[in-house]
Image (cartoon, rainbow, N blue to C red; front, side, top):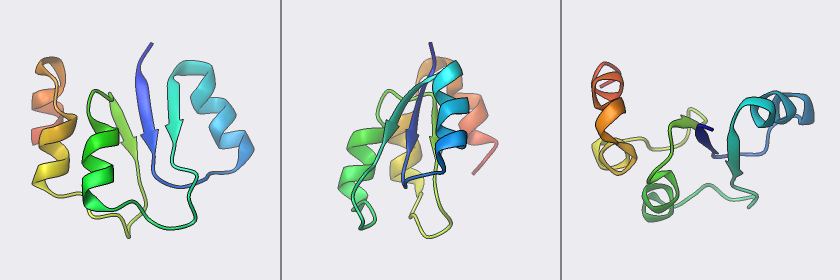
Length: 77
């Protein structure tokens, strides 16, 4: 089953939809993730659901990469 990191709490209905198809890791803190926390939590995940205020830089993309998803991530950069 694919795994997803969600960087903020989302409405219950949205999380339920994600949980039906994926393994979901939700950041539950009120504050935004620090860059090192985001890199650590995204490692090994298949997808990232983030907010516009989250800093998703090359280091985060590199931490998330797996062999099978490299081309998908490159198309986003």
